[in-house]
Length: 75
Image (cartoon, rainbow, N blue to C red; front, side):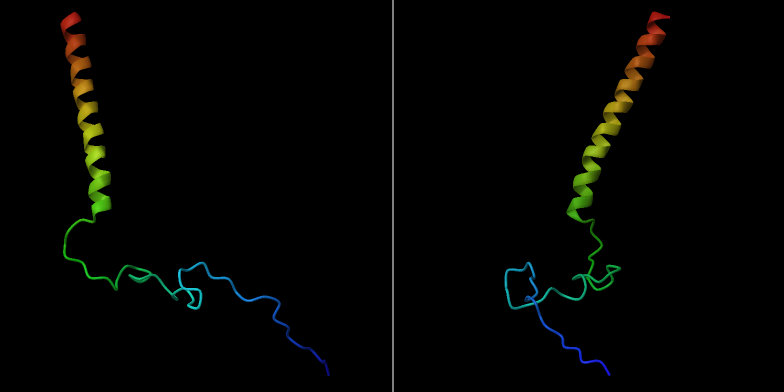
């Protein structure tokens, strides 16, 4: 009925170090992080995010305490 042909215009371009391999079908640790082993430790990224957050929290608490003390002294 119809005479159709498929023509490949260009090769696929994958941005990898090895030109002949395609990217994996899924993430290394799975889509829900269920294929990686965990040893119960926090990841370094989490520790690196929590420490500055705690430092800002402590500085805010000290600043609030100092403001409250100065207002009580001047009143």
